Length: 107
Picture 1: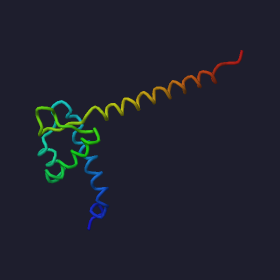
Picture 2 (picture 1 turned 180 degrees about the vertical axis):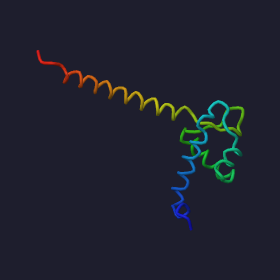
Picture 3 (picture 1 turned 135 degrees about the vertical axis):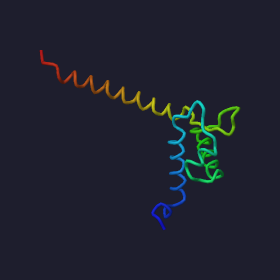
Picture 4 (picture 1 turned 60 degrees about the vertical axis):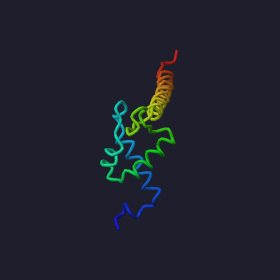
């Protein structure tokens, strides 16, 4: 038995869903068909569909309206990245202010 198969089912499911996120990235406009996603993941379409539905319930993936067999990522992950970028900018501003305060020559 391989190390991968010995992992608990929950870990396998989590890995499958993370894999789906990587597969869907860069396909936001046109999306990917369920069969194409299943082929890339080497999973049965039923398993892939269940995993995509979990991601949809969490607001991470969605079917493209009017093209129900096509899936894409929602804006949620981009929003997460933007929030992280704003946080890092705020931290950098505080760091820059501290460096400026401590690097001034005393008067």
